[in-house]
Length: 151
Ligand code: URA
Image (tube, rainbow, N blue to C red; front, top):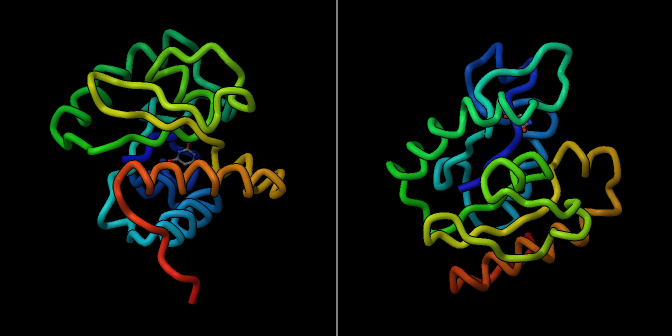
């Protein structure tokens, strides 16, 4: 399972998570791991975009967390990847900046949680893709899976 921050304009319009530009990059990241989007669940910390596309406030996050917790309880993912600082803060109360916390394991109700960068950040700074891929390979190793050979 992947957890992002919250829907953007494209997602609000379509009612689906990660369908805009960041979503297209996330799809590529998932494919590089050897999965399709149908094989994973993609959720968000908040369920609608805060006004002006700002980062959700702690109160807004708190308001939506019960919904996400319920999604996790129903899906029972083997593992969760938090995409970006808001996901890390919202799900596992991470206080370190994501640049420091990325690549580290946390736990949510017994489920291993990996912290990594948000794909929207990778669009702005593609150099961080190398670290993100290292984090995703750590995830695959924990799942006992090797990354597929490049086509
Ligand atoms: N960014 C997110 O964090 N979530 C989405 O669903 C889309 C963009």
